[in-house]
Amino acid sequence: MINNKALKISIPFAIFLALSVLLFKYSSYFLWIFPAYGLIFIWFSFYNERELEFLLLFLCTAMGFIIPKLSTFAETIEFSAFIFVEIFMLWILFYILHKIAAIKNDGFKKMTAEISSNLSKRKNIEDEVKRYESHQAALLHRIKFQSELSSSIQYISSSSNIEEIREKLGELVRKYFTDAATLVHSGIPSDVFEKWVFDRKTPLLIKDSSSEKRFSFGNFSEEEKSIVITPLNLFGAVAGFIRISSDKPQRFKNDDLRVLEIIASICAVSMENIRLFEQVEELAVKDGLTQLYTHRAFEGRLQEEILRSARGKTPFSFLMIDIDHFKKYNDTYGHQAGDSVLKTVAGILKDNIREVDFAARYGGEEFAIILTGIGKQDAANLAEHLRVTLEAARFNFAGTSTGVTASFGVSQFPADATIESQLIRVADERLYRAKDGGRNMVVYE
Image: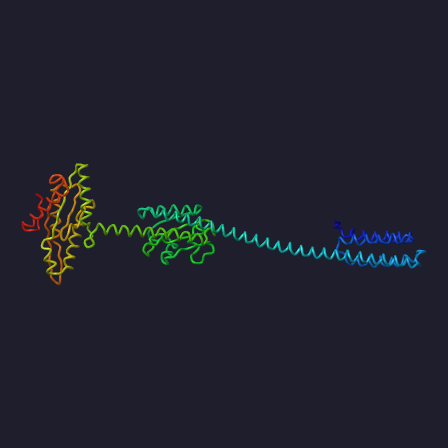
């Protein structure tokens, strides 16, 4: 198809002029030449030029009535009838072509509308696909994050102590924020930012130090254009901080704060679990009243000490201690007074031995002490010191001042015994000799 509008219009007018000239020149051949005007409308049927079609139809009709007047055959009825028929056929051709063009135009409009509808549907589908892809990407990101989070929980939960948790926490923070400065520490706040977190027990997110209103600009260093700080809570109290900073403003977003909060919560739960486990474990091996080790813990430690002493060929000593006339305190002053005596005696024993030694509540008012690497004579001297210290202690029950004494039995490995039961029996026998001998004394031979 020809796209130049001037050419589209000039061609039918050129046909009209050429045929009109032929009709004037050869008017006797009018009936043969006139139908050629139909070429004009056939040509126009390819284009939407309705005004020009009607104009040329009018001109062609006019030529059909004017030019025959120049012919010598124009006076016959047959010739006039043929002229009328040809003009009528020209109009019929125009009508048919116009109708075809209208049908084609309607079809084109319908097709255009259908194409537009399909394009709209296609756009909707593309938008739906984009939303699906976006949702899929977000879902995959969430799955990846949850998978990493699950791995982080398992990684941290495998820690056996709080210090190990802190080390793993530092690794995780550095893993998630590779391009930022990270710091994990416990203790008191180190600057105004951590003080703010400590006072409010809430995280702090500073996206851009230049637009921050809560703090003075002078509080920020050159490397701290954006900061995130999360408290490490332990049993409701702030025990430390997770801190990340960047020399780029807008480096951290709310999602980063959320990640840090989750990591901090995981670590806090793990630390609380370990602390609770340690407390439960301690309760299992320590006496609730005196805070000395239990009989069961003593038995385990005595076995270990015998093995260690046998391998190293170094002696150790064992003390059995019994509070004199303890039943009298309970009967005279009540059980609370008796408990007070037990706690005081335990405190004196614990405060007067070394850290490597082992003090336990053997049962009731009896106590046991393992003295690592000490011979019997030195052990007897320490027992005498403990006896004197206990004798000097004073109690006040219901306005009455009273004191306490204890008897001591001493044995040594391997001089007195080579197995656990013998070592205990020897010390116990000497303890009862001290009690039979008048109490408040040390027996080691």
